[in-house]
Length: 436
Image (tube, rainbow, N blue to C red; front, side, top):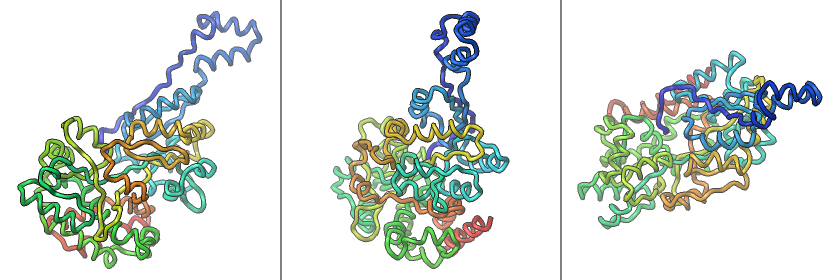
């Protein structure tokens, strides 16, 4: 989803500027403190210089620029705490954090996915955050809950829909779809006019994953028949093969109608973004993290977003949910300081700072709301309806198998295996993860 960078330690040092307030140079200040009352005054002076700052470490799979406003806010709000921000590439994140936690070490504040938070809560690595969690909506905390306790505070939500070029639709007299069948008809109409309907970087497994799962969400997971699939799946009580087949088969019109093509497996995300931004395609599936890149390549582009649809008319659906959940390491040597940070994040000001570098999402904290950019007017009804859902967030310890789903769908696109085999392979990967 986000662009990956090489793993590197990124530290945000909270600069101490109170030296001048100590009354002179280090030597004279110390002497003055002793004269006026000894040790207590010396300690107070040391505190003013920042010498006694508590250092805590925070890890995240997003680069520091996505947290800059938040780190600045924490530096101002909690001057007694210094946060060392450690970026770990998403491909290695779980392995590195798991290893550290199992050794009784690890960061003081851990950014957790729903799946990893469930695993770490079961192992006793995380501190319950029930009091702070009560300030957030259950839509955000439910995926970070285990055995009646809340173990992480939901960050700004993320969502993905379908960006579209408004001018291309208007110039070609093509109306926006309101169902999946209408969407396929729209894609067919663009193809007939010699315009690529959807730019897609299928070199990555993510587009096939999200697009197909959005359809399954609209058709099945959001219904009474499918609402318990996620919880049943993580407990080994349900399987995709034999359940998802009819929905994925219907969605496969994306392949049979040539919206997704085999040659797209040679195109990466950035190439697809470039194609859309420069007017080479009518639509592009992505989220707020790509908006700046799109508009910087073409400031004149008239852009909006539409949701994913099922076969029945509805407000549509977006793939998404709570972003990183902020958890506190139960073995932290500086747990009190870590809890102060968690409390500062759980304020309207803290949420605003977190949102600042992640605009496009929304907060789950009660009383915190932000205006979305105009580029999301087309999904305002979808967001208002709460139709934002990430299926694998409910898979618990098997959440990592969503990548397997994506790669298996790539094989399905290429025609190297049938749908039954595709879904069965995902079930096998989930079963293996649940056994660990």
